[in-house]
Structure formats: C-alpha cells, structure tokens
Image 1 (spheres, rainbow, N blue to C red):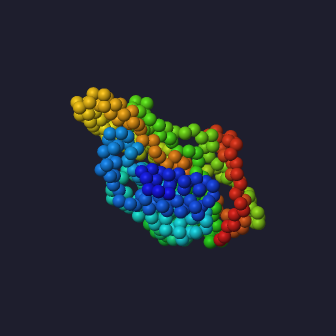
Image 2: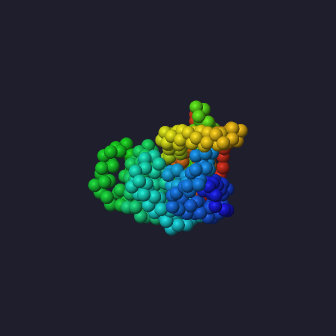
Image 3: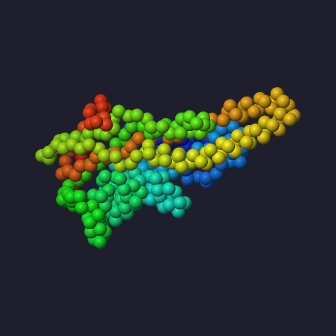
Length: 355
C-alpha cells in the first residue's frame, strides 16, 4: 500500500493470491496497479545504486522481468474473461501486443516476450469474432514458440476465418497432419477453453558456487496435467474428456532469463567486492577497528537478491472443447507424470455455452 523497492513484487504476489481465491475484481485492481508501476520511468536512484554496491542487490528497486510484465496483462485478460467482460479482456490483449512490439524494438530475446500472453490474446480476439486480429496473435505466438500443440490448428482455422486464402493454403501444406474440424466453422456451435495454471514456478536460491548470486531451481509438482471431463446437463451431446496440453513453460523461460543475466550479475558483484575493499581500506587508515567493523558489515550484508514473482505456475496448459449450445459441468482431475490420478480434483459450477 506504500511505495518501496519491493512494492511491485508484493503487488504481483497479492494479485495472484486473489486470482487463486476466485476474487477476480480484487485481483484486477492489484494487477492494474502493478502494470502502472512497470510503466513508470525505468531508473534506479544514484543513492540506491551506491547502497547496493556497498551492501546487497536487493537494495535496488525490483522491476520485474520482461516475461513477468507480460504475465500481468495475461492475468488481467484471464480475470476479465472469467468475469465475462470480454471488451476489457480485449483491452489487455491490445496492451500485450503493444508491449511485445516495444520489447521487439528493444531487441529482447524471443523467450522474454511471453508466447502465452500473445496466444491468449489470440483466443480472446477469436471469441470476439475479430478473426484477422486473432490470426496475427496466433502467428506471433508461433514465431515466439512453435512447440504449442494447438497452434497448427489455430493458424489454419484463423487464417480461413480471416479470409487469408493464400496463408490458409500455406499452413495447410505445412501442417498436413491437421484434420480440420467442421465444428470450427459451424456458427451453431460454441467452444469451452479450459486454462490450467499447473504447479509452481522455479524458486530463487543462492548459487552454490557464489552465495551472492541467485539461481533458479525447479519445484516438484505431483500434478503434471489435468484430465478435463465435460458432462452435458441440458443437451444430448456425448460426455467427452481431454488431457490438458502445455502451451507455455514458465519454469524454462524464468531459468533462461536469469541465466542470460548471470554474466552481468557476476560483473556487478565483482565491482561491489572491489568497492567494499576500497572503502574499508580508507576507513582502516584512519581507525583500524572501525575499518574492520565496516569490512565485516559490508561483506556480511552482501547476499543474493531472491525477490521474484513466486506464485507464477510451472506451466500453462489448455484443454479445448467444441460443443453444441447448452449447459455443461466440467470435472477436473490432476494426473501424475505417468497418467495416474494425483489426488487433486475439482468441479466447476455449471457452464452455459452459446452458439
């Protein structure tokens, strides 16, 4: 509730906690404030840099990684979608596109651009029947991460709906294994998209080779996927089930991002070590005991910056159903890596699907 060097990370954690509790309105209030903070002028005060050089990296304001900043908007879009506010979700889709463009101009690595944020914006554009915008988002997501198992069908379907005939034929040729589903183009059908935030993202710990440098380590999760069973309540459609598929690996991106900064972090801590030695020596020349105390204080206070958005998932996964209009119940069961039931289970309130 007050400005501090840690305010952004607190806001991201609190927004996630509200989202997990199903309190989407409160979650969005927090995420919107976090988004505003990330857009402020990117600077570090001279006094904070000096303090961090002589003490620890966590004296500098936490600004978040690029993929985290995009995840703020993806979570906002997800919350608005859960609240049925599609227009507001589309605003966040536009914000994602604007940020992706900005990061591209800044020369950020592709993995930092958060393929899920762009992919989810494509789903929202398609839900609003803005098929050309949907195609552009799906294509961008494919360029960032071609491993998303849903994208081949999405590219074919959205290109056809957007009347990009040449592009449609290109993707048909590139993905001959994709069998087009007539339901994709049936205006009398609807779609249910299940978004699963699976597991926990990696955790920062001091590196074993240098306790002043952070490293990210994976967190084990028993539930590796979800079996989604869709049961009709008011239609004669058959019950069907799917196992969720990963569309974005937060763990991999977070570790790649921190590893890419490793050389820079080492250089900063080497510079910090030298600065501490110089300052302690200057004090020691005037007062031997005070110099020793200063040397001990500066070095003992130097620790790895372990701040992070720790409530991010390990992966984002999807299951998708094309169904006739009507009411449905959705049962979700967690699965271990080998496919056995993990013990996690839940059931959604009744869902209403329109044509």
